[in-house]
Length: 276
Image 1 (cartoon, rainbow, N blue to C red):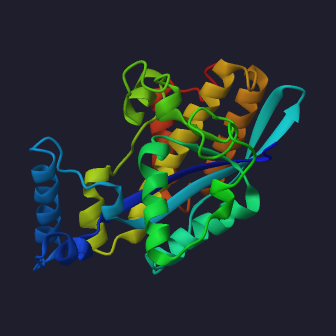
Image 2 (image 1 turned 120 degrees about the vertical axis):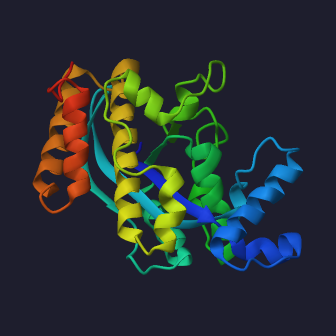
């Protein structure tokens, strides 16, 4: 049984270094290169989608929240232990990817994501293969039905985008939409469309902080999901919320993004973090 939650999110930029081999052309600058990669995907999808496929994303940030899982019979309680981004501001992609797989390989946590099965993990797998990074733990855990790669095993990897849509039976929603519906803060400050420009400008710390707030939103959604499904109860939910608020308040003075998140959360929840 897992003893840790590992809530994660990644930020990427299009990998324009692949263009010479993919299209036979070189990009004179990053902006042109991204347009060339977009045009390639528009061509192969008959104009339907210019977003690069998973192998063509370069990882520039991996952020995560780790919370311990405590159990009382069938009920779980969660306690935040850390929220941060992997590596350093100057870390290369290989180091970020290797750090992710090495850290999770030691913890064997329950993974929690929003569209992690559709985007984040596939990107990380492709980039791991690119850099020769091994991840035995991800592919050879437990049994045929209960493991990290089993789609219907949320106790191993709970992808909220899939779980909340009943694996495609209902419409898949964006995280920001679900947060709005549940009176949670959602995205604050930056959005994903700005990541490439921030990367070009060397604003890696800003990207990491943005990614961390996405992780926070994912964690809050997971707590609400855990309450709804009976994994935790009202006392356990409010306990986890109070710990998270306290954790953020202790660090908000040094990290403006955390204070901005707390302010947005207070406004979205009508002034009370414990709404239940």
